Length: 200
Image (cartoon, rainbow, N blue to C red):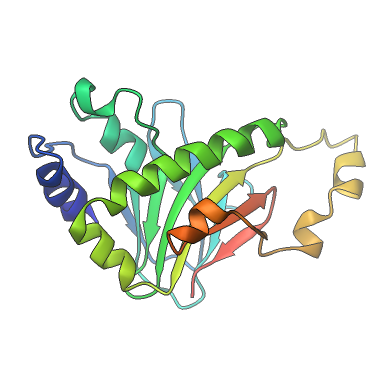
């Protein structure tokens, strides 16, 4: 993924090759969480509840996580201006290509609308690059995902835990209909709180 973005993406859009470093991370952890920090850096956590987007990797695949927001922001202003960008691209060696927008807000509805916009614009920018489209075509699982880590209730107040049973009832997230994504052979998924995306 790093070479596709650094070389093929920039060449397709007639941009100088990116010299950005440290925008791609790899992990083969069975469970990991991704945090999108305020400094636009992506951090991986292995402790439940430390990150904002949760992933299960039961087959211990080598997962590549590209900080797409950081990458796009490093490009010339004339290209990136007014161009929506999601936070991350997650892919494994054989099956999955996932775009993710990560939030930590109680205003799920407003952020969902914005996430869809950023994800769709990112998808359209990426699939214009023939080499990236070729990679996507070889993947069975193609998702645009909105991750929102809900605020935890104080320990003395358990109302949120009592009433927020989404993670128990729907641990694998929600697949939501969205014709724009489906027209590009992608699915739109939403993951709230402890809901976890399983890569297998």
